[in-house]
Image (cartoon, rainbow, N blue to C red; front, side):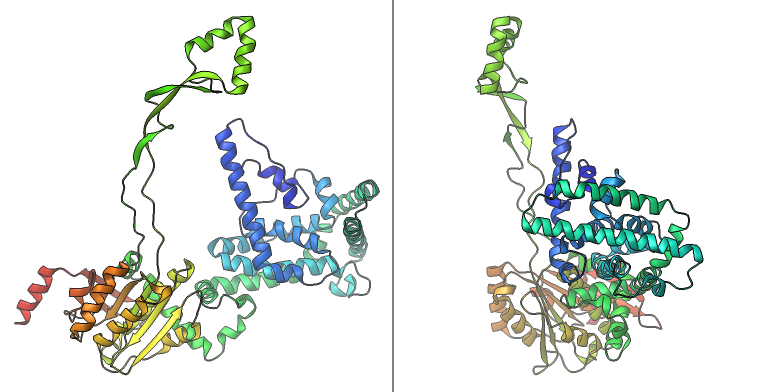
Length: 559
């Protein structure tokens, strides 16, 4: 990224970044925008996600904790290596953190943790919440005589290692002293620059001398053994349960699941997660089911009007003559001034003042694709009657789980309405205002049973559409179609509300040849043929779009 080298090699805070520009101004502006976007994203992570870790009281001054966190966030979360072209300059600010960073980069767990972070942003943030305290602890443990000594912390040190340990403790003490002095100078407002230069040079020499000592790499590997072990443990847990962690992070955004791995294996939560995992696996193995979930709630496009219009970006016709500072569209009489030594000075004066006579060129210009309207909320109506037990129940839960994951990740509101007979009715809301996550997990364990009443479900959907958070929502019916829409009043009200809020109904009819009248009010109707395997987490799913011709053929066959 253009200009990023200056950013990475500036040991100061993000606010003191300097940028370099390429000769191509457009390319330079784009790279600058990317750089600023990356900087803003990093700051947001530090302030929102890592704030508690950074703010925890430590011997290391908070500004330095933030700078170290910024480096590791760039590397782990955004995949941007922090390039160090001038080690001495880096050491002048970060001191003994320099050899620790290089050792961490060359370790075996490092690519694993970056790979996990690339797959899941939540996993990347969780890894930083584990990694940063361990780094801070190493910097503090070996520099404080009152804490556990390095000799006790390291096991079975060789004789030659004690000298390396002494050097390491010394540069850490000098590093912390430099950080504390810099913080106190900044707090008091004194000019500390002249006082610290000599100290920084001495520290830089000491750190580089330490890194030239035989065996220092082996020593740091031992120092960071506990860190490697914890990271490897975290990575293995994440690789096994990555999708579960992502879903749990969406359902319970305030809870730090990276510290609660062992809790997941306890009853009754383990049973819920096992079911969640089975339904996720079923969904991933069903391309037709993924197709309907991808289609539902798709973005709507504005009409493609005014996509081609007259614009200064078009250059195929002369509109008028005007004053400007552009030399690309000069009138010949203006260019002729450059041939005369006296008029040449006037030419440059006019250019600086924007008074050169120039052609104004306009033309037809393509303004790009139509604008995309933002996606809205979703209401899912799930038939939980006894006839849905078995394969239809598995498909319904898999589809609802996939919809919930998509809606929550896109920060869209969702409501799940479970209906059966008239008195069997339950609403589960997953929104920014209200997140009934525990009830949603319990729904995955819920055994379907009872009768079916489409009229009650339609009335519930109608009522939800009038709520402020769900106005304009699309509705998804998941049912086996073994009921009938018979309440004419509900139907008429539904048609009025549908037009008022521009809502759409999608009906997913599972393992049935009839839609129970839902096809008449639905914008899209699909029949699903499903057959589970012996384990109940896979099988055959085929999606058939409903048409009037197929419906008439089915009725003839029944007659």
